Image 1 (cartoon, one colour):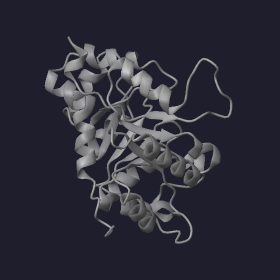
Image 2: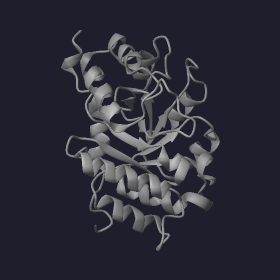
Image 3: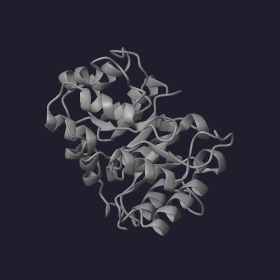
Image 4: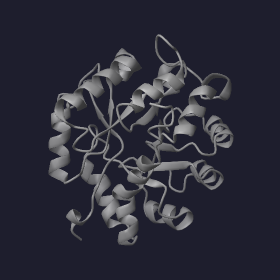
Length: 263
């Protein structure tokens, strides 16, 4: 099978120097583009580690500047901005923040309630979740540390919210994720090297169809070829393979309502 037949757009790439760097890994944007070129991946979704270390607003600003300076957005890179339920100064309004960000083009939301110290429940994040749902902005959430009871509550209250779970582990036929997938059509999964399960892709497609899975490279910690092999070796048809590789992500991006807040 020829890999070049498929557009492959990962959703989980992460740039930025960590507090304790690993001398064997490269975290900068140029290394990311070089690695994607080697693997024949197209530009996908990009996050900035600085959001963890220096605050969401600083990390988002640096990411946007980096993509603008490099022409990354013109080449197809889509930022994933870390958001918090309080918004940013001077308005401290999630709606105002989304309006400003949407003026710069489509983006994904990246939420990390564990790292940023807030609750996803309605009393804390309701205004943000309602705004994301209304504008159809997809949300990236890591499985690590996530309270799945809270996620079930969020998706029940916001049925049109699109949540993409990252870092779902090798638990086989996951006894918690599968029931959530059955209950909530707005729940999607990133299939990266983390989800290295024998016939796992086939079972997801067989049970839930081809449209709720997106591809992840694991950059920079993982070798992108591992996830690529899992996708290419899966016993699925080519239409499903193309959907997972890029088309499902592109469908999510097309749903975003750029002008929703009057930007």
